[in-house]
Length: 253
Ligand code: NAP
Image (cartoon, rainbow, N blue to C red; front, side, top):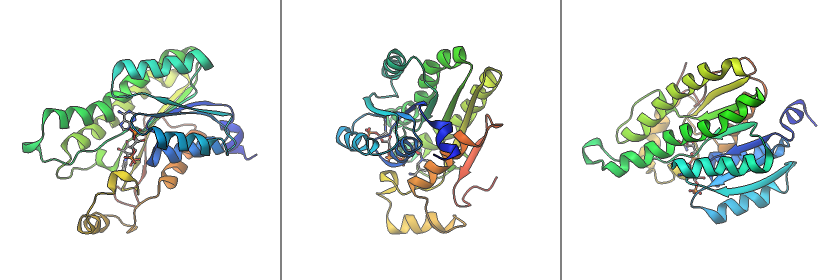
């Protein structure tokens, strides 16, 4: 058992949006590290079942999948209540669930705007509000919000997404200010372009254009992002309110 492994063994960890992509990779890595993994999903039941089966082959102290649309206040609260009723604590919360809708502002509907803001931003507020009383009582806890390079730049056709990720940086900082003296750390991991379903519809031309801005001239794998999350959870013991970039040089700060 590695040092990292013992640090995360038996920790109760909720990962939102863990059925696919980056959330799935984080859930599996936490499982390999010995955590008790609660993998949230919304619409992809079969994919979530596959994650559960794979988790059972890891060192996970245990694993469950729980359906909830975390962009809805009551569903996020019910998800946390279910975990607290069963485990009496949440040690780690990874706010990962996210969607993107590519629409120019002058063509964007209210739904295009609100769906993205609710899923990417309001969900983080709902989930943090739900877990914080128990973390404060326990005087410990670790929250990692999955931001984006889009929280540090603008790009066409992504008003709701870019706005949600910029706001997430601010929310992380406020959460850190409110909980830093209570044994709780709140940080953002901000991936650049990562090989998941979210970028699957990019044309070759759009992909080339994206790569042009990336110093390392390649996209990230979900595993690389998961590894950064594990780093933050296990090694970044004196960091809160910070952003950990993992963008191959797309964002340099
Ligand atoms: P993805 O492959 O499309 O997966 C999205 C995940 O979010 C799925 O598991 C999905 O679950 C879940 N989800 C969506 N809406 C949800 C809701 N309302 N409630 C609960 N879960 C919900 O996307 P990804 O690329 O892994 O993105 C994960 C995070 O990384 C997002 O926050 C995204 O903004 C961020 N990110 C991604 C990239 C990239 O290039 N891929 C870059 C920077 C940041 P269901 O299918 O079960 O609904």
